[in-house]
Length: 316
Image (cartoon, rainbow, N blue to C red; front, side):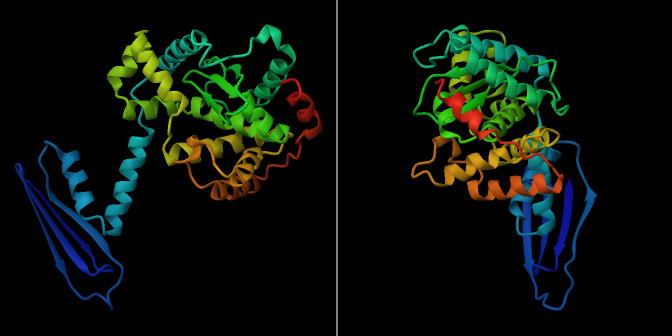
């Protein structure tokens, strides 16, 4: 049996919950607390060994108006958001499978051949190396970090698979104004790979069984993973984390560490933002948060290389 008594005098009620076998009883007693202090205490008197986690989830959702409950729920959600049942070796194998599927579907993903576009690829790799050499990438030597350019001038997008295969659309490269902006976007996508957001998110959205099938090379599973990756809707926490790491990756470099803010500024002026931004944090808020973090970290880089970037865009 579980008995939890929760008093939140600031909100003017007392919550009592009883768990006994499969029965749950919750009582809400309201009282006047205008002159009482903001106190929120929880007493755990007795607990069973079974289904404790689910009891707490139920309790937290039922007593959501209590500040303590909200903080506890946020902590639990944050832990689940960071959970990953896969090893980084699984990320590497999954990335190989997805990259192979993209290569075998040139109609959907018309990737520019590197041998025919050496100058623009060498340029992108030089930017990638700025990020890799920052000393901030966890899986710098383990992941592939291979770049691919997809010929599609109408799509403003970039994505990275587990294991560090990076895909950038020509539409995005042409849309941006300067080198630091592209660096910011690349750093953001590399952060998704390096922080292993994809397998964390796909574990929740598609299920562990499907990911395991994809790691084992089952084509149907790989195709589903690929479709999900291209339009993957990361959690708000993952997006904020990638924004933060993009600044941290660029902070030790001579470049403007808030380069990704330039991308979001431009997106604010778009009449129809890309679908992949629909569930992301508000662009205006992201600009402010990115710039604030760069200032807080005392990032001194100012390089943008706009002239060189304009020249590189003409290669496409």
